[in-house]
Image 1: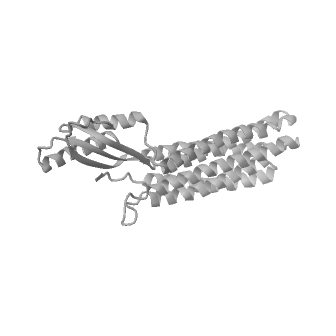
Image 2 (image 1 turned 90 degrees about the horizontal axis):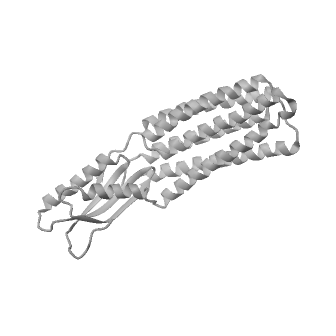
Image 3 (image 1 turned 120 degrees about the horizontal axis):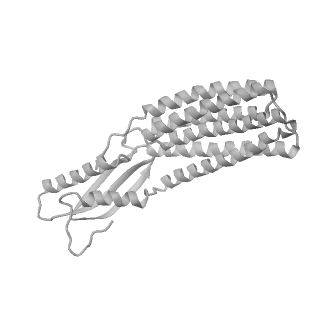
Length: 301
Protein backbone atom coordinates (compact mmCIF):
# COMPACT_ATOMS: atom_id res chain seq x y z
CA UNK A 1 0.00 0.00 0.00
CA UNK A 2 1.41 3.36 -1.01
CA UNK A 3 0.43 6.58 0.72
CA UNK A 4 1.05 10.15 -0.40
CA UNK A 5 2.19 12.67 2.19
CA UNK A 6 -0.98 14.70 2.95
CA UNK A 7 -1.13 18.35 1.94
CA UNK A 8 -0.39 20.62 4.91
CA UNK A 9 -3.46 22.18 6.48
CA UNK A 10 -1.53 25.27 7.65
CA UNK A 11 -3.10 27.50 4.98
CA UNK A 12 -6.59 26.42 6.05
CA UNK A 13 -5.80 27.02 9.72
CA UNK A 14 -4.41 30.50 9.04
CA UNK A 15 -7.36 31.70 6.98
CA UNK A 16 -9.83 30.23 9.48
CA UNK A 17 -8.12 32.10 12.34
CA UNK A 18 -8.31 35.31 10.29
CA UNK A 19 -12.01 34.64 9.74
CA UNK A 20 -12.54 34.08 13.44
CA UNK A 21 -11.09 37.51 14.28
CA UNK A 22 -13.12 39.20 11.51
CA UNK A 23 -16.32 37.54 12.74
CA UNK A 24 -15.76 38.79 16.29
CA UNK A 25 -15.24 42.37 15.06
CA UNK A 26 -18.20 42.28 12.66
CA UNK A 27 -20.59 40.77 15.20
CA UNK A 28 -19.69 43.51 17.70
CA UNK A 29 -20.07 46.25 15.08
CA UNK A 30 -23.45 45.03 13.80
CA UNK A 31 -24.86 44.43 17.28
CA UNK A 32 -23.88 47.91 18.43
CA UNK A 33 -25.10 49.73 15.32
CA UNK A 34 -28.25 47.60 15.09
CA UNK A 35 -29.28 48.44 18.65
CA UNK A 36 -28.40 52.13 18.31
CA UNK A 37 -30.30 52.56 15.03
CA UNK A 38 -33.17 50.21 15.83
CA UNK A 39 -32.37 47.91 12.90
CA UNK A 40 -33.78 44.42 13.55
CA UNK A 41 -32.21 43.17 10.33
CA UNK A 42 -28.75 44.29 11.39
CA UNK A 43 -29.12 42.63 14.80
CA UNK A 44 -30.18 39.39 13.07
CA UNK A 45 -27.17 39.79 10.78
CA UNK A 46 -24.97 40.05 13.88
CA UNK A 47 -26.39 36.73 15.08
CA UNK A 48 -25.41 35.27 11.70
CA UNK A 49 -21.83 36.47 12.25
CA UNK A 50 -21.82 34.86 15.69
CA UNK A 51 -22.83 31.55 14.09
CA UNK A 52 -19.74 31.92 11.90
CA UNK A 53 -17.63 31.92 15.06
CA UNK A 54 -19.02 28.50 15.95
CA UNK A 55 -18.22 27.08 12.53
CA UNK A 56 -14.70 28.57 12.65
CA UNK A 57 -14.01 26.56 15.81
CA UNK A 58 -15.52 23.43 14.24
CA UNK A 59 -13.32 23.79 11.14
CA UNK A 60 -10.18 24.36 13.22
CA UNK A 61 -10.93 21.18 15.14
CA UNK A 62 -11.65 19.26 11.93
CA UNK A 63 -8.37 20.37 10.33
CA UNK A 64 -6.29 19.56 13.40
CA UNK A 65 -7.84 16.13 13.92
CA UNK A 66 -8.69 15.14 10.35
CA UNK A 67 -5.17 15.53 8.90
CA UNK A 68 -3.45 13.38 11.55
CA UNK A 69 -1.63 10.33 10.25
CA UNK A 70 -2.94 6.78 10.68
CA UNK A 71 -2.27 5.11 14.02
CA UNK A 72 -2.86 1.74 15.71
CA UNK A 73 -6.53 2.56 16.37
CA UNK A 74 -7.28 4.34 13.09
CA UNK A 75 -5.65 2.42 10.25
CA UNK A 76 -7.12 4.63 7.53
CA UNK A 77 -6.32 7.93 9.21
CA UNK A 78 -8.72 10.52 10.60
CA UNK A 79 -10.16 12.09 7.44
CA UNK A 80 -13.73 11.29 8.54
CA UNK A 81 -13.35 13.91 11.29
CA UNK A 82 -13.01 16.57 8.59
CA UNK A 83 -16.07 15.17 6.80
CA UNK A 84 -17.98 15.39 10.08
CA UNK A 85 -16.84 19.00 10.52
CA UNK A 86 -18.14 19.77 7.01
CA UNK A 87 -21.50 18.22 7.93
CA UNK A 88 -21.75 20.33 11.10
CA UNK A 89 -20.93 23.51 9.18
CA UNK A 90 -23.53 22.72 6.51
CA UNK A 91 -26.23 22.01 9.11
CA UNK A 92 -25.38 25.28 10.85
CA UNK A 93 -25.74 27.07 7.53
CA UNK A 94 -29.19 25.54 7.05
CA UNK A 95 -30.20 26.42 10.62
CA UNK A 96 -29.13 30.04 10.21
CA UNK A 97 -31.08 30.22 6.92
CA UNK A 98 -34.25 29.01 8.64
CA UNK A 99 -33.74 31.54 11.47
CA UNK A 100 -33.28 34.45 9.05
CA UNK A 101 -36.24 33.36 6.92
CA UNK A 102 -38.66 32.97 9.84
CA UNK A 103 -37.60 36.27 11.38
CA UNK A 104 -38.15 38.04 8.05
CA UNK A 105 -41.53 36.30 7.56
CA UNK A 106 -42.71 37.54 10.97
CA UNK A 107 -41.85 41.11 10.01
CA UNK A 108 -43.69 40.77 6.68
CA UNK A 109 -46.81 39.33 8.32
CA UNK A 110 -46.83 41.95 11.07
CA UNK A 111 -46.78 44.74 8.49
CA UNK A 112 -44.49 46.75 10.78
CA UNK A 113 -40.98 47.40 9.50
CA UNK A 114 -38.43 49.81 10.92
CA UNK A 115 -36.50 52.26 8.75
CA UNK A 116 -32.96 52.48 10.16
CA UNK A 117 -30.57 55.28 9.22
CA UNK A 118 -27.45 55.57 7.11
CA UNK A 119 -25.14 54.36 9.88
CA UNK A 120 -26.76 50.94 9.60
CA UNK A 121 -26.24 51.02 5.83
CA UNK A 122 -22.54 51.75 6.33
CA UNK A 123 -22.18 48.84 8.78
CA UNK A 124 -23.88 46.50 6.29
CA UNK A 125 -21.58 47.69 3.49
CA UNK A 126 -18.49 47.03 5.64
CA UNK A 127 -19.81 43.54 6.37
CA UNK A 128 -20.43 42.81 2.67
CA UNK A 129 -16.95 43.88 1.58
CA UNK A 130 -15.01 42.15 4.37
CA UNK A 131 -16.95 38.86 4.19
CA UNK A 132 -16.74 38.64 0.38
CA UNK A 133 -12.96 39.12 0.55
CA UNK A 134 -12.80 36.52 3.31
CA UNK A 135 -14.90 34.13 1.21
CA UNK A 136 -12.53 34.38 -1.76
CA UNK A 137 -9.38 33.77 0.28
CA UNK A 138 -10.98 30.96 2.30
CA UNK A 139 -12.36 29.07 -0.70
CA UNK A 140 -8.97 29.36 -2.43
CA UNK A 141 -7.22 27.94 0.66
CA UNK A 142 -9.80 25.15 0.97
CA UNK A 143 -9.32 24.06 -2.64
CA UNK A 144 -5.54 24.27 -2.32
CA UNK A 145 -5.43 21.88 0.66
CA UNK A 146 -8.42 19.86 -0.64
CA UNK A 147 -10.54 20.51 2.47
CA UNK A 148 -14.30 20.28 2.11
CA UNK A 149 -14.74 21.73 5.62
CA UNK A 150 -12.76 24.89 4.77
CA UNK A 151 -14.72 25.32 1.51
CA UNK A 152 -17.97 24.91 3.46
CA UNK A 153 -16.81 27.57 5.90
CA UNK A 154 -16.03 29.86 2.97
CA UNK A 155 -19.66 29.57 1.88
CA UNK A 156 -20.69 30.48 5.42
CA UNK A 157 -18.72 33.71 4.97
CA UNK A 158 -20.50 34.36 1.67
CA UNK A 159 -23.89 33.64 3.26
CA UNK A 160 -23.10 36.33 5.83
CA UNK A 161 -22.22 38.72 3.01
CA UNK A 162 -25.48 37.89 1.24
CA UNK A 163 -27.53 38.48 4.38
CA UNK A 164 -25.81 41.86 4.73
CA UNK A 165 -26.79 42.60 1.13
CA UNK A 166 -30.42 42.02 2.12
CA UNK A 167 -29.99 44.38 5.06
CA UNK A 168 -28.43 47.05 2.84
CA UNK A 169 -31.19 46.77 0.23
CA UNK A 170 -33.85 47.14 2.89
CA UNK A 171 -32.16 50.15 4.47
CA UNK A 172 -31.70 51.89 1.10
CA UNK A 173 -35.30 51.15 0.12
CA UNK A 174 -36.52 52.61 3.39
CA UNK A 175 -34.56 55.79 2.73
CA UNK A 176 -36.28 56.19 -0.65
CA UNK A 177 -39.83 55.57 0.60
CA UNK A 178 -40.95 54.80 4.14
CA UNK A 179 -43.54 52.25 3.01
CA UNK A 180 -40.79 50.26 1.26
CA UNK A 181 -39.11 49.31 4.53
CA UNK A 182 -40.56 45.80 4.22
CA UNK A 183 -38.26 45.26 1.20
CA UNK A 184 -35.57 44.41 3.74
CA UNK A 185 -37.61 41.44 4.92
CA UNK A 186 -38.44 40.17 1.43
CA UNK A 187 -34.80 40.31 0.43
CA UNK A 188 -33.88 38.42 3.61
CA UNK A 189 -36.33 35.62 2.68
CA UNK A 190 -34.74 35.22 -0.76
CA UNK A 191 -31.23 35.14 0.72
CA UNK A 192 -32.34 32.66 3.38
CA UNK A 193 -33.58 30.28 0.67
CA UNK A 194 -30.24 30.56 -1.17
CA UNK A 195 -28.29 29.86 2.02
CA UNK A 196 -30.58 26.91 2.84
CA UNK A 197 -29.94 25.42 -0.61
CA UNK A 198 -26.15 25.65 -0.14
CA UNK A 199 -26.36 24.13 3.35
CA UNK A 200 -28.48 21.17 2.21
CA UNK A 201 -26.23 20.54 -0.80
CA UNK A 202 -23.08 20.50 1.35
CA UNK A 203 -24.70 18.21 3.92
CA UNK A 204 -25.67 15.76 1.19
CA UNK A 205 -22.06 15.76 -0.04
CA UNK A 206 -20.78 15.02 3.47
CA UNK A 207 -23.36 12.26 3.92
CA UNK A 208 -22.28 10.68 0.62
CA UNK A 209 -18.67 10.61 1.86
CA UNK A 210 -19.74 8.81 5.02
CA UNK A 211 -21.21 6.18 2.69
CA UNK A 212 -17.88 5.82 0.80
CA UNK A 213 -19.19 7.34 -2.43
CA UNK A 214 -16.98 6.84 -5.47
CA UNK A 215 -15.89 9.88 -7.51
CA UNK A 216 -17.51 10.68 -10.86
CA UNK A 217 -17.38 7.81 -13.43
CA UNK A 218 -15.13 9.90 -15.67
CA UNK A 219 -12.53 10.07 -12.86
CA UNK A 220 -12.73 6.29 -12.31
CA UNK A 221 -12.27 5.69 -16.05
CA UNK A 222 -9.20 7.94 -16.12
CA UNK A 223 -7.73 6.05 -13.17
CA UNK A 224 -8.36 2.75 -14.96
CA UNK A 225 -6.72 4.07 -18.13
CA UNK A 226 -3.64 5.17 -16.18
CA UNK A 227 -3.33 1.68 -14.67
CA UNK A 228 -3.94 -0.14 -17.96
CA UNK A 229 -1.39 1.91 -19.89
CA UNK A 230 1.43 1.17 -17.44
CA UNK A 231 4.02 -1.10 -19.15
CA UNK A 232 3.76 -4.67 -17.89
CA UNK A 233 0.08 -4.47 -16.88
CA UNK A 234 -1.93 -7.02 -18.87
CA UNK A 235 -5.31 -6.16 -17.38
CA UNK A 236 -7.08 -5.03 -14.23
CA UNK A 237 -10.12 -5.90 -12.16
CA UNK A 238 -11.82 -5.02 -8.86
CA UNK A 239 -10.96 -1.32 -9.16
CA UNK A 240 -12.47 0.47 -6.17
CA UNK A 241 -12.22 4.17 -5.32
CA UNK A 242 -13.79 5.97 -2.38
CA UNK A 243 -13.92 9.63 -1.40
CA UNK A 244 -12.72 10.65 2.05
CA UNK A 245 -12.61 14.34 3.01
CA UNK A 246 -12.30 15.43 -0.64
CA UNK A 247 -9.47 12.97 -1.28
CA UNK A 248 -9.42 9.54 -2.90
CA UNK A 249 -8.41 6.16 -1.56
CA UNK A 250 -8.06 3.42 -4.17
CA UNK A 251 -7.41 -0.28 -4.53
CA UNK A 252 -7.01 -2.33 -7.70
CA UNK A 253 -5.93 -5.79 -8.83
CA UNK A 254 -3.54 -5.75 -11.77
CA UNK A 255 -2.78 -8.78 -13.93
CA UNK A 256 0.83 -9.42 -14.88
CA UNK A 257 2.73 -12.18 -16.64
CA UNK A 258 2.81 -15.14 -14.27
CA UNK A 259 6.35 -16.04 -15.35
CA UNK A 260 8.06 -12.83 -14.22
CA UNK A 261 9.93 -12.54 -10.91
CA UNK A 262 8.40 -11.12 -7.75
CA UNK A 263 10.81 -8.18 -8.00
CA UNK A 264 9.64 -7.43 -11.55
CA UNK A 265 6.01 -7.63 -10.50
CA UNK A 266 6.70 -5.29 -7.58
CA UNK A 267 8.40 -2.84 -9.96
CA UNK A 268 5.31 -2.80 -12.20
CA UNK A 269 3.06 -2.15 -9.18
CA UNK A 270 5.28 0.76 -8.13
CA UNK A 271 5.04 2.24 -11.63
CA UNK A 272 1.24 2.00 -11.42
CA UNK A 273 1.35 3.91 -8.12
CA UNK A 274 3.73 6.52 -9.56
CA UNK A 275 1.46 7.08 -12.58
CA UNK A 276 -1.59 7.54 -10.37
CA UNK A 277 0.07 9.89 -7.89
CA UNK A 278 1.49 11.91 -10.79
CA UNK A 279 -1.87 12.36 -12.53
CA UNK A 280 -4.31 12.56 -9.60
CA UNK A 281 -3.41 15.03 -6.89
CA UNK A 282 -6.51 14.00 -4.91
CA UNK A 283 -5.21 10.45 -4.41
CA UNK A 284 -3.68 9.94 -0.97
CA UNK A 285 -3.67 6.16 -0.66
CA UNK A 286 -3.26 3.35 -3.22
CA UNK A 287 -3.33 -0.41 -2.75
CA UNK A 288 -2.20 -2.49 -5.74
CA UNK A 289 -2.65 -6.28 -5.72
CA UNK A 290 -0.87 -8.43 -8.30
CA UNK A 291 -2.50 -11.45 -9.95
CA UNK A 292 -1.03 -13.73 -12.63
CA UNK A 293 -2.70 -13.32 -16.02
CA UNK A 294 -5.70 -15.67 -16.23
CA UNK A 295 -6.78 -16.30 -19.80
CA UNK A 296 -10.25 -17.36 -18.68
CA UNK A 297 -10.97 -14.14 -16.82
CA UNK A 298 -11.25 -10.94 -18.87
CA UNK A 299 -10.07 -7.66 -17.37
CA UNK A 300 -12.69 -5.25 -16.16
CA UNK A 301 -12.97 -1.96 -14.30
